[in-house]
Image (cartoon, rainbow, N blue to C red; front, side, top):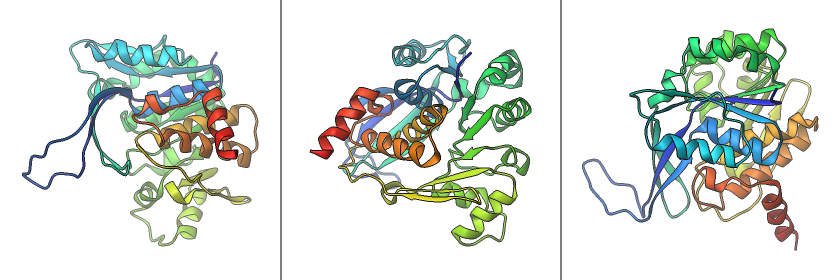
Length: 305
């Protein structure tokens, strides 16, 4: 069994540096271009594997040239990949990413094979969900698939961490079974777009009333906030020179899962995740920015000198 099971997307990120973003109808000349393994699910699995132990990734890819590179990146980082479904005649997921000089990004995702991860395939790996201690999910695969995974996990006491990105509305049925919900500010707003909750306090109360057990709101440079009705924690982010923020949220999620599995308390797990995410924004790309334990320790040691 794997302690942490990540089910989600795998994409090849097509990254272009740009001095500015084009206006409507405008063509501009960009800078450096790279193809970097990514996808929110694969990123989180790789982060959990490099910073933790016993991680498996389950997803779907096409039968194209991107698939072997994505699988190799995960396997080389220590994640198990025995249950990745290869879909004939369908492209592997692709993300087109532009990055400006401040490290901010704009992303368009073409899901491809990620949307072929359907209910039938989840039934085939049901035992993996039941055996795992933690399951880590995102929203780059169909919501109906997420719902089935959550049903199986909740019925078998597998802890569920959900990163609700890309942002979209989720049913109360799904939310009621989530152990840890990891929205950023925009995602928090969208999750409660149909309610009367206006301020942060009202939104958190509403989610807790819906059955979410723990909520972690990530706020970039302003740090993170944790709520569960009994405990509130705020941690500042580390001050770093941001080069590319593409996978910061994914690194945070994977690192948090890796720390939580070691039975760290919430504050310790959050602190570890904040530090790992800070490292990631100092590097280019998605999976190329994910540290292992040695790299993270060296980064933190340099900051303390």
